[in-house]
Length: 415
Image (cartoon, rainbow, N blue to C red):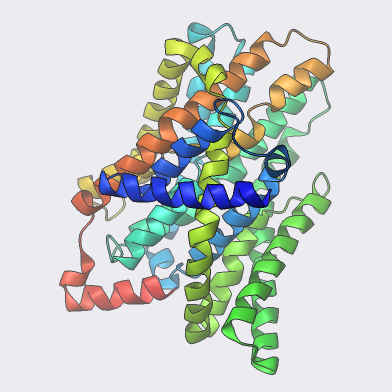
């Protein structure tokens, strides 16, 4: 496994450098590298390394969400609070519902099977979106209106909504007794509980840091360790109490920033260095989950269905921003930022197939759902990442050009 990690680091850095030279985001190169060296193409990764892939991807995702927490500005969130809440469920609901309705017209699926597919695809990828939003905050792009902060926060809550709806539909498909009302009510409970427990954890850590004053490196390791434990708490509570651990991770960083800005900057700086390594692991291993032959099996019909879902999602984003202070260019940027799929699709794309096999049903619809989920990663993750990176400098204002705007942007980037 050590050799696989070494090879992954060197090849990942090379892919990042080459794609940046080509004016593409480096993460696109790492995603495609993962597809190439993954088990479904060259199979160049050690089996023990692949078996640890899920844990490694989770740790890398925790690092970037911690960085997101340290970039969340209370002032910026206050400006876009209403839009953030609307963006957390309306675009996903429209995308999932559209695919549920159109699915049987494109693919040999029932409406219920199409709905399962729809809410697999409805989850936007924080792994792709969050790093790019952090970069725009640091460069003061759109920071005056809080646009990157809005997308960053909404994208993280979007997953909670999509996965909850998917779980309800899967229960119905399996013939289980599902209380739809209580499941839907669990969405805001999950979000609020995640934010509350994360904020409490951040406050406790802050008091401990003030009491014992460890070095910044040790503080960073403690924060990462506690964040991993928060995810473990979610696993233990699963099926009993709804709890959004990844939102708790972001809230932890947010509280430390609000109370001790200098300390937050030190930890964020250390996390930025860890992220160089973590990003290679995250994007290459997400790419390695892409089963290229399966994705190609989805064909033109699967791709057309994905595009229809993205069109509905984009309409939802536009609808959420109708009465916002954002201009047309900024709304277009928000629409594009909501396209990338990756982490959730890789994690649950095969779940319907496993359930069908377990129930002794025809696995063909499960294979189709998996194929379209994989194709969505292959199509939207590189394209979405490139479009976001391309659109940001062209559609978002440079708030550093005005002194007052620059001060606002600095405050936002500090969080």
